[in-house]
Length: 471
Ligand SMILES: Cc1cc2nc3c(=O)[nH]c(=O)nc-3n(C[C@H](O)[C@H](O)[C@H](O)COP(=O)(O)OP(=O)(O)OC[C@H]3O[C@@H](n4cnc5c(N)ncnc54)[C@H](O)[C@@H]3O)c2cc1C
Image 1 (tube, rainbow, N blue to C red):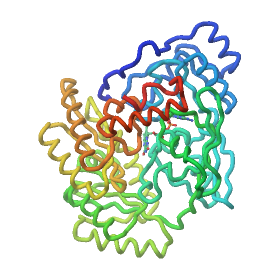
Image 2 (cartoon, protein in one colour):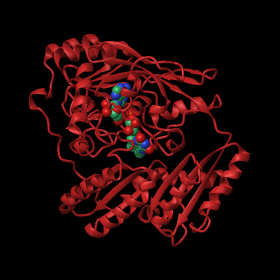
Image 3 (cartoon, rainbow, N blue to C red):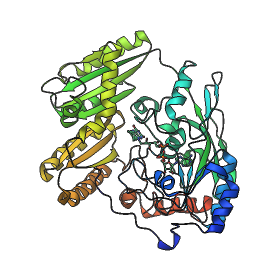
Image 4 (cartoon, rainbow, N blue to C red):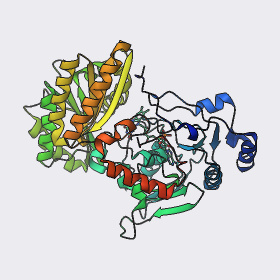
């Protein structure tokens, strides 16, 4: 079970748990038929996401068909001061799509068309509800590559990825979603439609509102179309699984690879407890206290050279350097990576996961801190994640509800140490509802206030996803 989070603090007079019959009549006129969901079970289905936050049924759910629906709903909601929570596929981990203030959940799941792939300019355009894996497959069919690869690739939406600035293993080489977004079509509170960005890979025209919108977690606008740049599909890929006899051996090696100028596409880290859990799916060599799972991209010739150089750096630090030569071995390793989150929690009653990131050279320091925290608190702390980006998913696992407070303190200590090391509270999941009470640890009051002023300029009545990001 996910460890409980304290319920979000709300401003009671802004909460909208139900809509009057006249408002419902107006909504029906805007989105007739099955685009408006009002029954209890239907609303309940749109109350939660993959975060530990208790689901909250909204007063109404709108299943938008196109940008016109979105604009009409936002105009109505702004006039009536009804909170709106944009929703993609509901796979978010921080409660971003949970309508804590009630009101309307505005789902874009039906806006799921791939609008265009242009190999001549290496661009793709999609509606926001398109499942990211479908965009990737469509690009690959043209010899192109959409690099952001969250582990939820087969279920999350491209609009949700934009809203959270999602990332994945290969962000190490190619960057998170933001790097790939060239332009967005968005609708503001009030219903105004804007086209942001451009179709070119560079531009110096005006403020970069596209980047501002990426990672804004539905608090500024609803994304109704996304234009992304595509890369060329790598000619070849290699996966290496490299176990180590200590955590420090693994993280020091990663830093050494950086220093040597070697750039794998992905470098995933697992501590011993994560490896124990994965051993139900793949064979883990005995004596392994940590491991790195690499993916390397390049031409066939350049990859052989890269692997040799990596083996040179890792040689006497690693227990072995295992290159997955056949497709089945490769799939087993990446399947184990995908499942590790589920596997680690199987033996425990409670789990709390945090998603911190530090500069990669400071991974050894955070690894030391986690070892000390484990010893000091007696909590089982299991760590894995996208170490190539310094991004670790730290899991606190325990059996007794009486330990909730200890975990809360351990999480606070982890955040503080992360920030001392120049890191951040969220590498890829966002702040949402679950982490907003910690935002002030990372951002100075003046910075929070400046962001609130920006929000006010775009969303003067504060209807866009209230209760998220800001304390
Ligand atoms: C098994 C699993 C593995 C995961 N692995 C990763 C990973 O490797 N990397 C990673 O980054 N994340 C990961 N996630 C988290 C999640 O998949 C991402 O945060 C994803 O980007 C959320 O997309 P979604 O479509 O589900 O968005 P939702 O959960 O529906 O919404 C997320 C946020 O985006 C906003 N939003 C959604 N659509 C729009 C829109 N059209 N316009 C404006 N705002 C919008 C919502 O209001 C909310 O704040 C994982 C989740 C699961 C369950």
